[in-house]
Length: 88
Figure 1: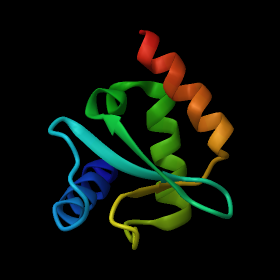
Figure 2: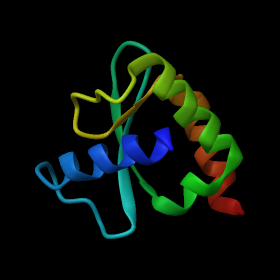
Figure 3: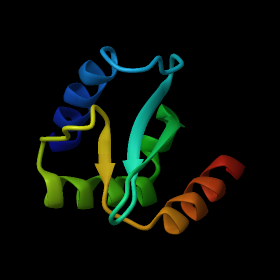
């Protein structure tokens, strides 16, 4: 599965960057300037978040030079989505 390949590469890159708590993943979000977010891995099971991962795969493939998954959406949209996910 393509999402697994993205995650495998992203997780191995994160080990070389700033510490990320166990059970979390770093993503970079933004249209022009990217902002770093650390999110729980549980978000990956949510269909809405999987849609964002599919968009990331379409736009960036498996190459994420920042060491985490780069998600092509506005920061406001991402914050709205993650706030909804944190309430479920």
